[in-house]
Length: 397
Ligand SMILES: Cc1ncc(COP(=O)(O)O)c(C=O)c1O
Image 1 (cartoon, rainbow, N blue to C red):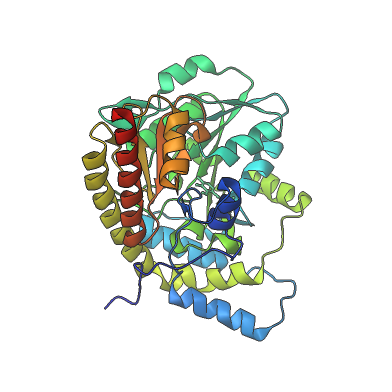
Image 2 (tube, rainbow, N blue to C red):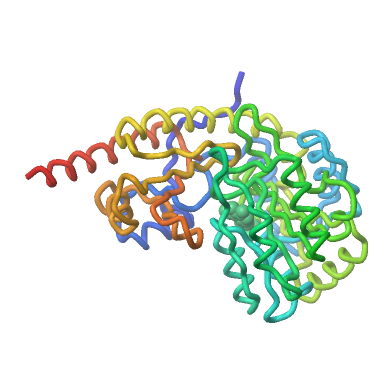
């Protein structure tokens, strides 16, 4: 019997939620369904809530030292869930992924160097890299046989000796791609050939649509291991982003030493009580939660995939491989992104992220966050239907 309830709608307004409260302020009302920021409207596993309760009941929130269960938990999770062997000494603590990206960019590249980040991209990775005065090269993923792929031949022509780093998001946000072993190997070979450091953000690794299997870049053997930095967190998997707890996997000792020193220099050394509580139980006891949430997301996906084309026959709902996101092409439905945005945000009062948010080339797309109860999606469909009917009747009149 399932211990979990993903169908109850929980009001998150008034909790200083980025997804709900900050977005409400942005749109100027509290009636909008907020589906922008990628956290889920589900409670975390009961084991994590209980462990956090223990911390709160203790009542002293002093300086923390990283829990002893941190590295062993990560090693066993990667082995059991992803069939990937890590060594405990490869693991470094970092509070957040975007912090790790910033420290890495500052440590391994110089001002003016070029960094590769495919578009569409998760914007903070672009923001911190360009914020460090590096030039971000954003080759667009291209569609081949209905899947987004990296065009490494075209990329080869765009890089030069000042290109030092590639940032890869795996599985990919927002296209949801789960890169195959062959693709990962090709990316690894490219980085070795062009003397690039490879930073791989695996934060979405625990979400795979039915029939899909995530492969970690840490499982790709050979010379890439000496120029590889993987970053991950329990954040998405257990919906615990607010606990600020992540980790780096760095197989090469020299790279690791430099990164460790840089993290020390940035003052990013202290764990926190709440992140520690997560790391004591999430990877040890909560695998079943990830299985159940994936099954719920698969059902949400099937629902939207059936309903959206009934309303908009020209919409293209892209295949989903991983994540709890849906990447949807509305370019044939609305004349431009301004009209698309106005339809969703002002007419339907459904706030989703527009394609332009993810860099160049994807205006007219939207990213829908399906990490919510089915009832929320049904309400979304009701609102879209009614707003669409009003648009159609105003065109006819
Ligand atoms: C690809 C990716 N990386 C990183 C993050 C967030 O990481 P953090 O909050 O630890 O910086 C997200 C959140 O949506 C994400 O999608």
